[in-house]
Image 1 (cartoon, rainbow, N blue to C red):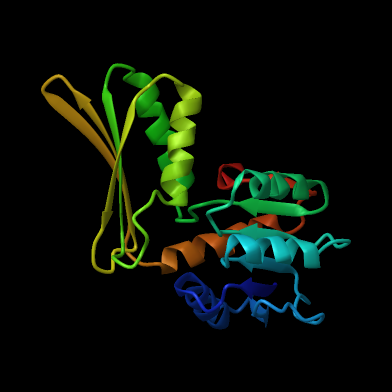
Image 2: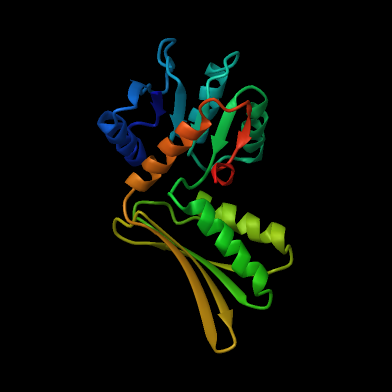
Length: 218
């Protein structure tokens, strides 16, 4: 499988390059910068960890093709999010804020706990590296939206932390009378995001055009 990597200069992008170079079944087909030259997208699939404007420019460049795209970029506004969904009419596209192996199962368990304990107080905590902006990550925003869709009036507290070189820790704490339950997903290396994105790319190959998420890969 020939893989084009957008955002190769970032930490996850670098992990992607290392994994592609080490895999027998993968070939790096390109790692273009913002200019997107004409011959830079000659691959079987594109994995994008760039920026919202970079992702939109990528979709512009891919107009008229059916090249599969895996998007791990976060921070899209409402119009950009809708465009990503609309892109499913033209190509298979899989979008996720978190490609950690096991994340889809974690999300399912988290929502199951929240639903099973409707009177519990909920706190969603995230910890990332000190260089990351102190605002909710794409993972937290997605889980927050999931819980709101499940129970629109339910209160959910957010606890945002930035420490050292932490790759990513997400915890849902359910406070009960004299007890609590905590469900945690800890990412020990950013390599996990790269591994999950490549597995998503393998899964996406040969799929019909459509908008997919990591939950569809289960």
